[in-house]
Length: 291
Image (cartoon, rainbow, N blue to C red):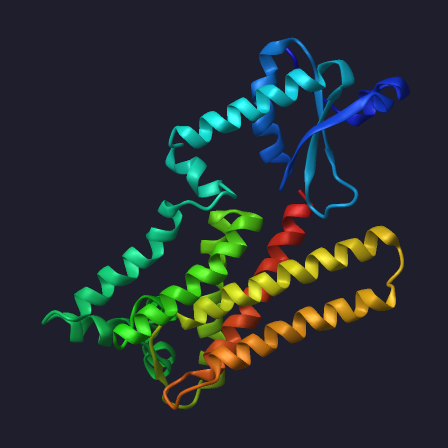
């Protein structure tokens, strides 16, 4: 059976003979895709891609390249044709309809529950209430408001926004990261909102804090990508600076356009969600790169 090899084990001749047969968002994804090669009796090596921040390639000897590429492609086709298990769906970078239905289904079910006789209790129990969090220690109120909505327009606006931004985060870093960005960023945004209203009463509900956390995560991914290219070149060119300014400026413009309208809008929660999502994705990306 073949085994993965380390770059340090290769001779100069073997290094010069390497051909890439697939690129993936991380080393684990690359090794997972390369498992189909293990029964062939050939070896492969997974290497970071110097021109693509955070991506890894599967490299094999040139004499094995066509066979290896065919095996990987056939295996990928079989995975698409046959539904993978839940864990594979969760870590997938290919966003399916199942991924898109999970969050909306939960939000719609919770909204339907709030329309019942017990709904008033659910809203009272779960909404963001700065005085109850600080005075009574009801810290769950940092998370539960993300699942509650005032009316159908409020609900569907957040569902559409979450699907739009979440789709692009999931395409780049996987479905699990998209959901974690929404939950961690949304909860973190509510925590910052609590600090702002520590000595004042403040009530709010809605997933919009999580929606703008996804937007902040998207901007963080792009900033991380541009910074990675800058580090690889070893010099910060003028267009690189303007690219970073443009990305951040575009994110803030979207935040202002989508998150600052309406007298009942919690503008600070939107801003804090954006910041929390940005910080979370930067920390997560740094942790991934250091593994």
